[in-house]
Amino acid sequence: MTEADVTYFRTFGFLHLRGIQTDAAPAIAEAFERVFAKELPLVGRQGRAGVTRIAERSDVLQETLLADSRCPLLARQLLGGDVAYVGGDGVRYDGATYWHRDGNHRALRLLKIVQYLEPLGPDTGALRFMPGTHRRGGSWDGFAPEMENPARHLGMEPAEVPCFIVESSPGDLIAFDPHSYHASFGGADNRCQITTTYAAVPESLEARRELSDYLLADRSVL
Image (cartoon, rainbow, N blue to C red):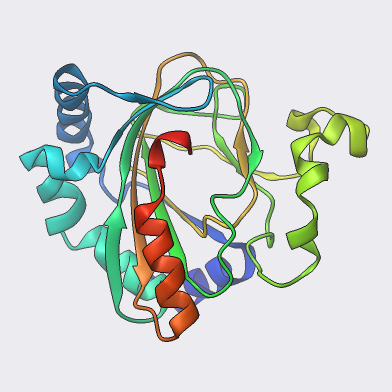
């Protein structure tokens, strides 16, 4: 990546990298289906069925997502130092995913890397971000009610909230700070997603405590 890429990520909270794993995309999709045929997915909120730590359940996914240098190097560059892999999911989605953040950590720095197994656009479930909302300790931290019910608080439907829509293809990587407000609308049933999540190696007691809490959290409800 360029220095401008890193600055873009730190400014807006996400980065779209096109075609990074195009060569591995067919093998990743095939391995995803094999894992889901073998494992019993955990059913979380409505429209979400997931297999936790999917990369460890397949030799192909272990090789392409963890042993291959692309995702770990991306995490080190964007988080600015040593990182630790802290898990990842394979997920099938039905319907919309409404505006939310993944957690509320003050000191722990995380990076989630997402890849979808089918092309997605504005009307077919592409991931949406509200740029800059990853920043901690500011006004966005108190904005949860508006995001949970935009129709009531902002007078607009969730899909009308101003945002950046990431149109992606298999092989693309979408890296984002999970504290960014993100959502997905208009997608067909059975959309397939793989995530890998990295944490910056904690440098404070608070960050170590938050990392411990993160690792012990029930991922099935996310």
